[in-house]
Each structure stands twice: as C-alpha cells, then as structure tokens.
Amino acid sequence: MNDSDINKLAAKLTKSLAIKDDLKELATKEDLKKLERKIDELDGKADTILEFAEAVDETVSGHEKRLKRIEAVPVIAHQIKK
Image (cartoon, rainbow, N blue to C red; front, side, top):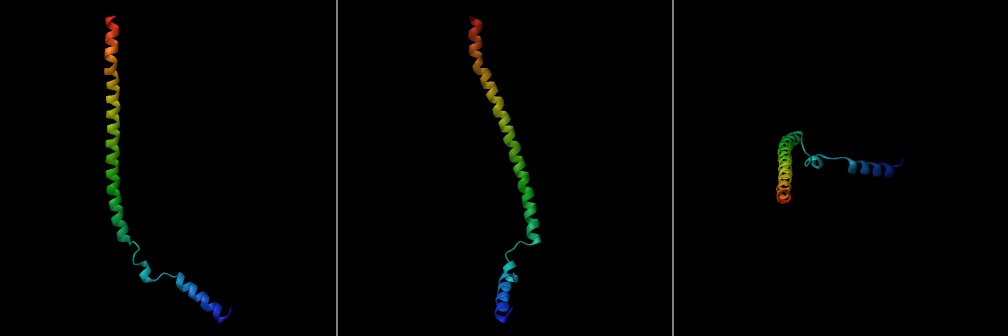
C-alpha cells in the first residue's frame, strides 16, 4: 500500500466516523424516559377509547335487535287478528 492509498483510506474512515456535532440531535436516555411516560399515558387513553367503542357497538347492536322486534310487532298483531 502506498501513501496515496493510505491517504484515501484515512479520508474514507474520517468521513465514516461520527463526531460530537453529529450526535447532538440524537435522543438521550432522559428523552426516552420522558417518551416512555407519554407512551404509557397514550396507551391508557387508547384503552379507554377502545372500551368506549366496544360499549357503543354493544348498545347499537342491542338497539338494532329491539328495533327488529318492534318492526315485527305490527305483523304479529295483524296475524293474530285473523
């Protein structure tokens, strides 16, 4: 390996190494801890929303069943009159 090859290799290695300024924008352990607390809070809110959605589905289903029964009443009443 000659001096030119060594200089090229050194230049490539220098470009591939991270420097302190490159790491400034990365998250710290403290940032991640804060984010975990927020994720837990959002998970709790998401669970509440999903539970509410399930309750709404059950209510709608119950109302639909009752509506079908109510719609059937005139037909049954008419059949009984005969």
